[in-house]
Structure formats: structure tokens, C-alpha cells
Image 1 (cartoon, one colour):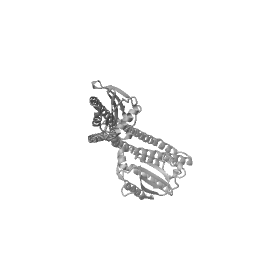
Image 2 (cartoon, rainbow, N blue to C red):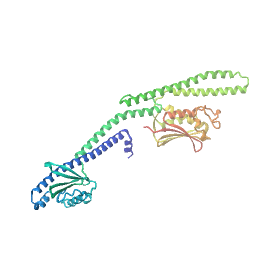
Image 3 (cartoon, one colour):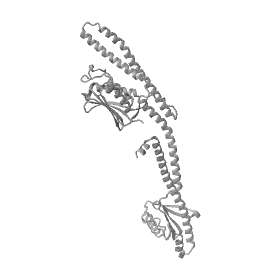
Length: 456
């Protein structure tokens, strides 16, 4: 059921549903119009036939003896047409005439239901002249799907006629359903072809936008198809080019500033060596060393950003395990709890290793040890790093992601670092479509590196 719903939400499914809905509505409108027109045409045809027949019966009655009248009426009456003779035209009393006509119809061999013969108080007689100058008075009975006629036979006798055939539900022939099915099939095929012609460029655009959002190198989209699709592809290509230029310019500027700052810092440090006051000299040199470390870290970050790493498929379990083993060989207390047997993921592995290394380094430095685990989630996966340190207060958990921010209580200057580790980690995770968040762990800080979706 979920697959059907997903298909109906797609461009092809919605296009087919709209086409079939339009076909259904048009056929329903056509059917009702056709049925009304057909009923009107049939009623007019039968009216002309009954009028001609009534005129013939009146002429016959006029030429025979009165004792033959009952036999003539018996021979001409049918299940839907009734004739009777009166000494008055009765047309002045419309409702009374309808009551008599109703009684005559109920005497027929196939009488209609009495509930269908409803008296119409708004019906009015109309006078018309037919062949041979015969004057006929006609009463339209819409509720009966029929009419009434009064024809003078002579000065003392009138022939009354009523026709009534309540409408039945007319079902279309099998050819109508066959034609409808063929039309629906052709519309479905055309909809699939059109939707695919429109959908394929959109799928490429979606995939390219997703890859671009994860920092991957994306080939320019082919500008083909309808004008709207070509303009969309061209706009995406221009946006991609502008983004690449913007990132390159920003990275180049950061590298230039960091590189240019190294010279004056070195010069100031040499001059600081000649300060006579030892305490002032040490503080001055310590501040300059800190500035130099910040500049070197920024320059290294800019170099890494400018380096283009290709995106490829890796096994996250293997990647994290190898990193933890390397750090453990350096004497760090790092443990890893793997996820499923194999977790394939398309990423830039060196960048992801750097982000995870920064987080593990912080956990070991400020919490004594790092416990790394891989947890599968509905919307992706989480690489969780927990420590046993003092943690970070809730109001500072977002602030520590700002560049060069260090908390005085637990992240002081003497423990090392310049405050770029978490900032770099978040930048790398966001370039992969994920994010980094800080939570309170069981015994310390819990850092969650979230990656959306698991690609195979």
C-alpha cells in the first residue's frame, strides 16, 4: 500500500491520475448531455408518430358507425398510448384531464407505476395545426415523459390521446466501454511518456543538487528539453559556478590572511625576546605563541578546504575502526562499538576522518577517554562519541561551535587547542548533509555526528 501511495505522489502517478480524472469527468458530462439530447430527440420523434396516428384514428372514427368505436379504440391502444372518446374536449380543466388520462393508462396491459403519474398543475395546452388542416391541442407532460392530445372528430365528439413512458436508466452499449477503455489506455501511455520526459531532467537536477549540497563535484547539467527545463538547468549550472567561486575566494582570502599574519607575529616575538621584565616577556611571548597557533590552525583549515577530495563509497565501520585503532596506538584510550556488519556510505573519507578525530581528541583531552559507537536511525545514522568529563552546560553547547571559542571552566588554554575542532567537525558534517549536536551523556558529554540516509 505504501508503494502505491509513493507512486501516486510521483510526477508520473499524479499526471496519470489527472488525465484519467479529466477523462472520467468529460465522459460523465458527455454522457448526461448525450442522454438528455437523445431523450429529447426520441420524445419528438414519438410525438410526431403519435400525432399522426391520433389524426388517423380521428379520421377513422369520423367515417364509421358509433357502434364500432370501442373496437377501433381497443385495436389502437397500446401499453404506452391510450385513446378514448369524450363529448367534450376537457382541455379547460388541465388537472381533471390528467386524472382521466392517468385512469386510462392504468387500464393498459403494461400499466406504469401509479406513483410515476404525478399531476402537473403547471402544464398548459398548446394549439397546433397538422396535415390536412387538422387542429390539435397538445399538453406536454414532463413528469410522465409524454404528452396529451385532443383532436375534434366532429362538433359533438373529441378524441383524447395520452402517451406516457417514464424514463428508464439507459445503459451505454459495450462499444462505449470499449472506447472508454482504449482512450484511458492511450492517455495513460501518453502521460507516462510526457512525465518521463519531464521527470528525468528533474531527477538529474535533484541528484545533482543533493550531491552539491554534500560538497561533491558535480558535472554541469545538460541543458536540453523544453524551454522551462533548459532554463532551470542553466540556472542550476550558474548557481553551482557562483558557489564554487565564492568558496574558492573565501578559502583563498582566509589562507592569505593567515599566511600574512605569520610574518608580523614572528617579528613581534623576536622583539619580545629583548624585553627586560621577565614576567612581562613570558606573558607577551605566550600570547604571541597563542596567536601563532591560531594562525597556523586557520591556515591548515584553509588548505584543507581548498583541497578537493573525491567522493567515494566506504564502509563506515571499517573507517571508524581504523581511526580508533590508530589513535589507540598513540596511547589514547579509545573504544569502538561497531554497528551492523557493513555500513556503506558515500562520502569524502579523509574529511570525515578529520571531523571524527577532532571530536575524539576533545573527548580524550577533556574526558579522559572516548567511547565511540555507530547507531542506525530511521532517517540515517549517528556516530556517537561519549566521554567521562565534566560535560558542557546547555547554554554553551551551541556557542562552542563558533570558531576560536573555548570554555574557561573545562577547556582552558593550557590544555591545548585553539577552538577550531568542533567548528571544523560541524562544517565537514554539514557539507555531507548532516550535522553535529551535543547532548548530556550517561557520565559526561555525548557528541552525535548525524549523517542522513544510508546509501548502498
